[in-house]
Image (cartoon, rainbow, N blue to C red):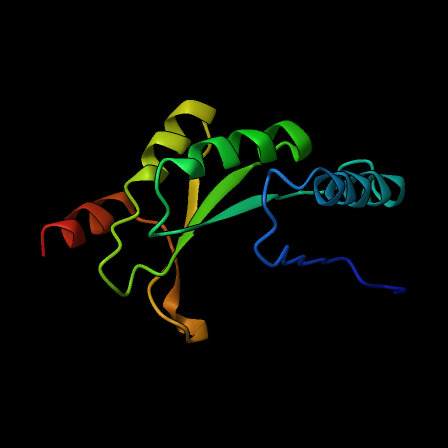
Length: 122
């Protein structure tokens, strides 16, 4: 993959309890660092807006393995509120970067705290 400087890796629902798959993520990070010592530049954990308290443990394990730099939450177009996201953001001191409010490309939005809170009360 010459002259490629972006990698987007979708872990396809990878669980923090699957040690061998978590080790694969760690290896990907090591390989990226061989090519660019500053890589990866951004490592986001994407949380399903309907996730419960288990997402906190999941985030802790991912952060321990690959040092997350931020969070995103998806599936906020339904009844999910994504409240666990704030607990994760606070406990790991991670910024919330994006929210997903649908399935179209334009439905992935930069996170805006005021808009998010306003939407909770709509």
